[in-house]
Length: 329
Image: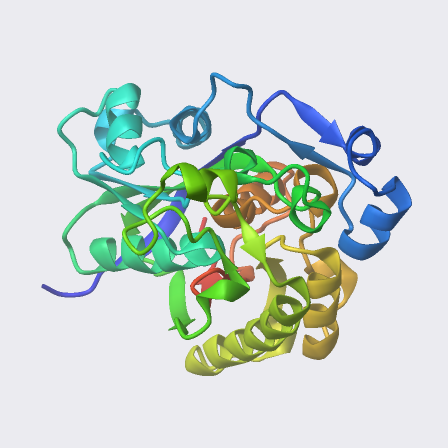
């Protein structure tokens, strides 16, 4: 099959109603608003209620994207959800979302590559369209990270939030997908993982008591790797697309930590107005962070046809990647 083009025709995002501020965290953690803000850039994060799950967030973001695109769920050929906090081990959360949207029996599957989920998903979804397999694909990054947080661990409890962002990709004569750069290294999973939650260390009472099913992170080492890999991946994807840093209209990075984003932008020589940051409101929402930031930027009218956007992420896996994307009409 001959390659076709792909473009994004709809965006949407959603965050739970419950807001947890830095001042709220002071009530049970040895921390302060100033300490959190200075070290992370975060002021608020949204956490799910007891009866909300990832599929609820994903469905809300998807519905917003459908409205934005002027489409119905039946118009979409395939549904992909990037998440490490699925509703269940199986079935895939994407199956639940597609059915809830009214697209029962359409193909649907999940991607579990943590914070790099949207980057990997955008590459896969674009490939499915450009190769002629599907005409339209819904890609959703959605997380309920508050469900796997040790809320007594100051090093992680302050960082993570819940939310979802969705994009609808469609076949196009003009090709927005310019290049990608993907990578992974599984030699040091202990830097960022929830290890008591799979076949290596199945959950039992001892694992639950030890909180092995919750997020564990070695922040200092992860910080250094994140900056290095995001800078390298951005440079690589620009080289593959025969572009340079001056061509970038917007860098939309994974919202892990403002200091990571600032350091990445500084090494790339990008001014503040070219870097999208919404971490103060949402915290780190893993696979949801980039599509949420994209949705807010597009809906604010900031993105123009022809703008070069570079999406870049680093996260658990360890994994990283970037996509160079030319915004279409």
